[in-house]
Amino acid sequence: MKQKEVTVFSTPSCPWCSTVKIYLEEKGVKFTDYDVSRDHERAKKMISRSGSMGVPQLWIGDEVIVGFDQAKIDQLLG
Image 1 (cartoon, rainbow, N blue to C red):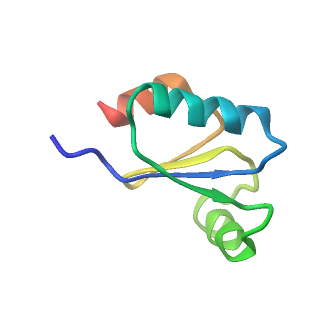
Image 2 (image 1 turned 30 degrees about the vertical axis):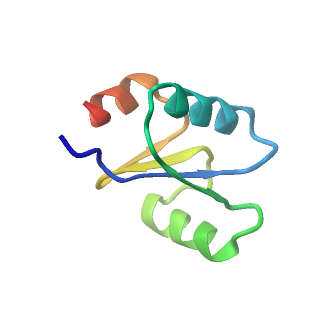
C-alpha cells in the first residue's frame, strides 16, 4: 500500500515540531519538512489552508492536523 503524502510545517524553536518529526522517522514515514520561520510563502500557504498559525502542522493526504495528535496521525497513516 502506498503511503499518503506527508508534509510537516515546523519551526526550529518548537519542541513539539521536533517530537513529531522524530515520531514519524521512528515509524519509517517519509515526509517533507518546511521551516515556516524562514519560508514565508509556505507559511502563508499553511495558514491559508488550515486557518491556523500553529505548529507543528501536518498535512497527511487531504487532512490537516495542527499539533502533535498521535492518535490522529496513526489513524490517517493506517
